[in-house]
Amino acid sequence: MMKLSYYAYTNRGGRPNNEDSIRFQVQGGRGVFVLADGLGGHSCGEVASTAASQSILEGCLVARSVDQEMLKEQMKEANRLVLEGQQLPGQEDMKTTAVALVIEGAQAFWAHVGDSRLYHFSDGQLAFATRDHSVTYMKYLGGEISYMDIYHDDDRSSLLRVLGKPSCQPETGQAQVKPGDGFLLCSDGFWEYVYQEEAQADLLKAETSKQWADLMLLRQIRRTPPGNDNFSVIAVFVEEGSM
Image 1 (cartoon, rainbow, N blue to C red):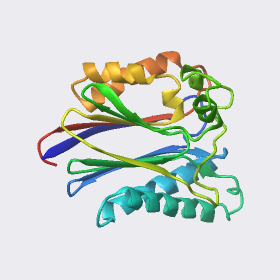
Image 2 (image 1 turned 180 degrees about the vertical axis):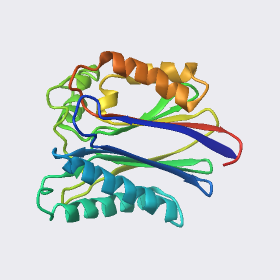
Image 3 (image 1 turned 30 degrees about the horizontal axis):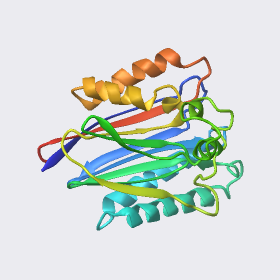
């Protein structure tokens, strides 16, 4: 059997409100971790990210079985709730990104919409990273810019997929997991300042999920300019033992 240890942190950065939302729970041998980054300003993004993250967490915890299709359905349900919320005055423009990870037994499943990321490290190496649903990432895939340009490109906040649009197209994935694996969920306010090679290097130094997060946050906090975006991170370790 395996057990999960995890550490989560969110900060409003240099903004008046924190429109990021994080939710996580381990229950009955199933670990669910969700991060959402709200869009729309004037605290509406906060409404969207909170509704989406809570809906995904609860849906994943009560689902009879876990697979990519289940996660896709949870994302679609969260999208329905955000669209419903847009009917209220002042919330017409609210939207949110979302990334979710579910670990049960030796399997991990994930889904994302937008540019909140998930990284999976195994054997000390990057095994998988989600692809941002952004104009900038499409430019990278098309060969117009390099991978490092993604962090600074002017179009990186132009998102092609979010929760809060009639069409919800989550991208999903799955992998086998083993003790020593690490997962990182983070919002763009975090990954813009901490490169994946650095996250990997800090993972190799860390003995706990909190230590891993702290090492990365030290890098992030040193680099962020005044007025920077909200930033959030969930670090998950897969360890020997039972949940």
